[in-house]
Amino acid sequence: MKQTSITYEQVAAAADALAEEGKQPSIRSVRERLNSGSHNAINKFLNAWQEARTAVAPTAPELPQAIVSAIAAELNRAIVAARSEVEGQLGQAREEAAALAAAGEMLEAKRDGLAKQNAILTSERDMLAGKVAQLTNSLAETHGRIEREQQATEAARIELATARVRVEQQEKAETALAATNEKLCAALDHEKQAHAAAVQQVAVLTAKLEASIDNATQAEARSEKALKLYEKLREQAAKQARQLEGLKQQQGDKKASSKAEGEKPTASRLPKSKAPRT
Image (cartoon, rainbow, N blue to C red):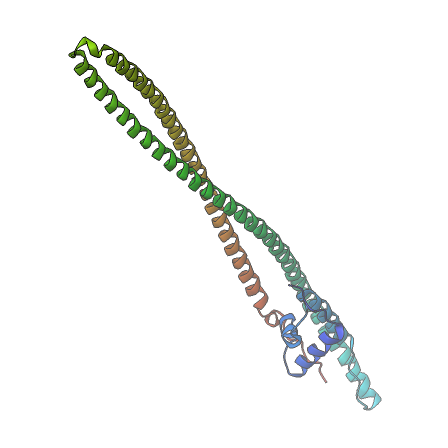
């Protein structure tokens, strides 16, 4: 998230206010007082404020010259000792602040990378969902074709059974006609021709039935192949969803860790400065 720009004067004013309240100015306390600004910018301006405070020398009181000289010499020794100690503490604090800033920048970079990866995985998930929807529609159409072909096959079987019944009836009629008078030979010849036509029709219907059975078999094979592809894509989508959840969880853990690191009080790491001796 983009931080609001701040100035040195704002950081210095907040640090002075905290110091007057008897509180140790820190990155966290200054940011809470300003309610804006990045940790890196606050750290830079807070270091400059601390250097400016360290450079300010106390004003000597108006006393006799001998006392003033003695006090000034003592103050100078105290200031030198205090400055050395403060500079050591300040250097350590700067190193710690720089390390924290570097860690913050690294976490921000990782967060941006995870956000991009999250967007890519979301796009891939949506694309897989679209493919699954298309395969579902294709599977429904395949089931419809199979059902229609099964109905056609059943109709062909019924028609074949009917033709076989007709053939059987024709054969019975031929048996009955064989016992009749020779005068019925012409009629018998006609019935034989009808029988041949019926046999031919049976052959045609048998060929249709076999073709329908082949079509149904091929349709079932296509359906099985589509089902396998659908299951494979669904597993891929589930895997991508699990990876996405893992990345979200990892991002949440890292954010929580970064927040916990940022909330650690820094004032306790800096020993309190000794007040100048008067």
